[in-house]
Image 1 (tube, rainbow, N blue to C red):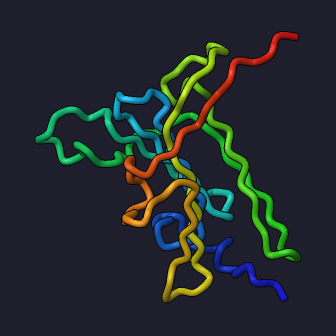
Image 2 (cartoon, rainbow, N blue to C red):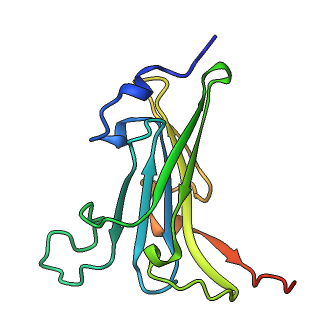
Image 3 (tube, rainbow, N blue to C red):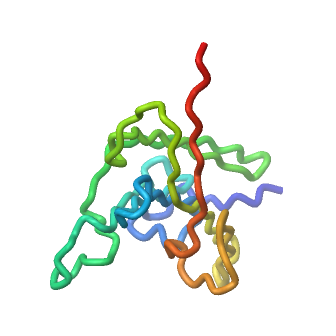
Length: 155
């Protein structure tokens, strides 16, 4: 029996927080406190992005929050496998969108990956790559893990 709800494909994209989603959070320059968030769901048109850390004025209401007005250059496509109750999201995020150059050198990023599942409307099922027992929000930088990028091997 197909368990992938048809409303996933028809759900309004305005409020992805209440839908089945995959969230990627990246802090590519450790210590500069700029974090990028990318959110997608099975609806091909569902992509959302935001960034936190560009607003430095504490009197600005966007200070310390994700600014949904940030628009990064990235693409998203989805593949649904209804027979096996699966969906896969393909995200392409250029390094330039994250404010870095692809120098080919080893680097360390911080970040997190999460999935929010909404099969049961009364309860969200949240899976996170890096978390601890005190985790309260998906984008808490204290829960970020480390992504290690190695230099490419010479050919």
